[in-house]
Image (cartoon, rainbow, N blue to C red):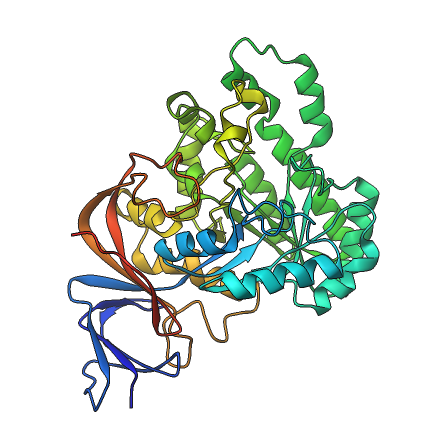
Length: 434
């Protein structure tokens, strides 16, 4: 009856954790039972002393291929994500060459990813000045949604949107019944502060150039445009609760809006930029310890829809420029979304079902993939992560599976370990450490 049975594990179900056997056939979960009987050639996996989570759905990664595979490509990127328990990811449109803003670029990127990725993926399309006529084609090709920057993206291939493009793009995306993801930082505020901030301390200068008010202004403006056009919005990597409150108010008023934060905003504060240097640089920047604690509390209070990695690596030559302010701003961290939230279960009231909701169920629902993934139920795809506890695991360059081996997370001690990741019932990552 089964190709694989996973036995003796504590299964993280939608509303409880329960020790049940998982019967898998044809890449799907076909049975959940207290005692499944093996027959014939059925393979049995013993998950004793382990927890079983639904595969992570990471809605925000940058794999940068074609064009910048030397930053991170589909081969190393998908393997790294699998090592973090990720079975489905959404790749952002901005760092590839060409950027994913045309029909031909979408075809090219999908072709490359289909050949190289070991797990499932979807592609974001881009909204930039001049490509409004491409949005319908990108949607019809299967774009999971669209991404726009309200401040410079950092690459020449992907321009940030002006207000007119944003309004017209939102109207078209609403007609398509799709979603617009926004990097929400205010260009006027950032550019004004870049001209006026004292740069004696480059780390402090960077945080002052990208203050919380730059996020809040961009979010407030976008929400006004969404109210006018009826466009569904998803705000990426929100770093503070002042901005979150604006989004919560918009939700209460009936706007179709969701919000994510990232593991690095939940685990680290601005001091990491002094300790880890450019490897802790991101946009928006890491905030104060007070803001970090407030963000964790907001997560516990249900004000954040889900968590995504914003994995955005680069070659060391773009990091080690000798100038913090012009170093590439991105975190090499796609491997650690699930582990980071599991760490929070050790010190907060966050539960394992909460973690499954934040890393799999909620993104699946938001992007209408929940009919076959995002939770452990009969009929869903057998995308599963086996996690062991009480295995203090220090991140080293040897255990970091991304292309580049420098990261904010190097030296970090996680209290849990990813033992194995199954994609449609087939193992795509196995931890061989003792």
